[in-house]
Length: 315
Image: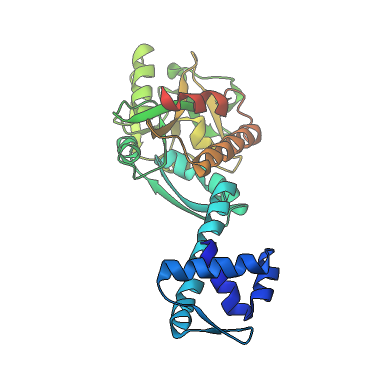
């Protein structure tokens, strides 16, 4: 590289003196480096004519490729600097729809605000697919509710809220601090599929209270459930994450008693350290969660610090 750099500067500037000044080395050092390059290449680069250097045809043929090599090297150096500073790269994220609709839009927007050259791929899918994508290196990070055991991945706590009932703020039950299944037994209930974690929790809560769960509407996404509540179709059995995806104040969440915690989980590949981009994205996500908790006044939401979740990467 040093020989190519000296050759490049002599070709650009035309003299050994000018090249030496540009490179901050002596003229004899430039001459020695050129001679070394010629020995390595097996042909002359310059002809010396009356204290002037004349580029040989071989040098003229080699020069454009040398310029291209240094341009490529400059690109590599710039990319390395950008990666070190977290300003460039690709980040693949897989998440269940509750995260994709609620927390991730703000997180992605804030993350890319100071990193406009970062490309983010965000895919919404089932929890099983999220885990599979991380395990197969198709995603750098995964976000799910509740743990899913799978080989090759690490699952750590990110955040938790209480399971409860979403209702219009004008509903009579909105004046209560909490609800029990008997309070809403005769209400039209909107519930997530019984194959999903929140649907399973709903079935369990009502069974433990010995109250029949009569589902009026079954949905697959929390945002759809909130839209139905807003339309007057009934009350929804959800967690606090769903409310974070509902920016208006016309709905309120009343937790069940006794309290049921719903945990948001971060899924990563077990045997690899997270990239700088992934680590900084998690930090941004934590900031967004803290802000959302404050905005929606959810004191029951618990933010798990990066320190604890980050150390679990090799567990």
